[in-house]
Length: 213
Image 1 (cartoon, helix red, strand yellow):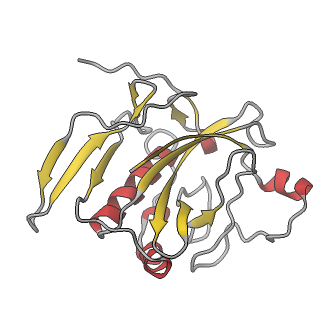
Image 2 (cartoon, one colour):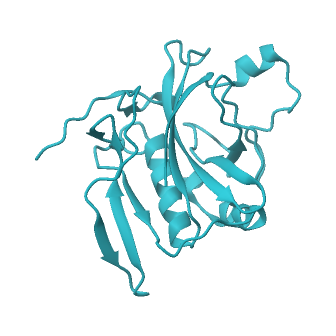
């Protein structure tokens, strides 16, 4: 049966499914055997009853490792520093934030780290006057609790490192403070004024639509 998919704007100009209410469930479960004989469980992401798709129309698929564990903060930093998701070019028609979050999730699970796929709705900003939807990842660290990671590389971004750790809370600005090794990027002062935050932000977090492990 074909799935109906609605599209709207995503951060940096891609397309995605508009959503206000999210059903955080996985679609038909598929078990895939790897060369190491570890069974990965694959499933689609459903949003408001519709399959979530990437920029090229493929169904976003999460590959979960049943043996994955929550990492420590140091383990997470080491993984993100080595992971190359953020080096992938941002392409409006083939690779947007949904795809970056899918890649980082699956890479983390393959590395034995439990990861979540997160979607947020951001309110109007100087960059997106009507608001925007955005995808990122989360990790439940053993010593620092829930940590949000955004590895989406913006278009025309000239620095190697685009990994950022940030606060995600309803009612707060979505600002990507750079925290991982590398040069350049969102290296903004943590004590920015509300006016400065508004200029740096992709928008106020209106809703955390789903955190899907």
